[in-house]
Image (cartoon, rainbow, N blue to C red; front, side):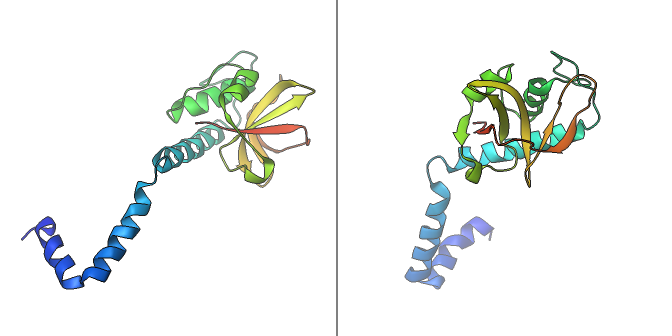
Length: 157
C-alpha cells in the first residue's frame, strides 16, 4: 500500500476532530499572497548573499558587475542573480519598490540615501543597522554601518 492510499484510512482512524484540525492547519498554507511574499523574502536574502560575495570588488561609476560596481549596479546585479528585475538607477529602484518603515525593514531590503527629495545612493540592508554597498570612487564593495538618518527603505517585489 502506497502512502497516498493510506491517507484516507489514517484519517478514518484519527477521527473527525483530528481531520478538522488537519484541514484547518492546512488552510493556513493557502493564504492568498503568502507564496509571493515568501518568494520575495527568499529573493531578497539571496540578493543580500550575492552582494556579500562581491566584498572587495572595486567601485566604478556606471558598472553593473560582475567584477566592478557602482551602488545601483551592485543592487541591480544582486537582485538579478536572485531572479528579480530592477531598473538601473537608485532613484528608479526606489520608485519600483514597496516602501517600508524603519521599524519594518528586514534583511535584504534596499536602503536609499536621500538629500532633500533626491535619492543619491542605495545599498542592501544586512541587519543590525548595516548595509552592503559600493560607496564611491576609490573604494570597494563593503559592509558598513548606516551613517545617517536620511534614509528610506524599499522592499523588492
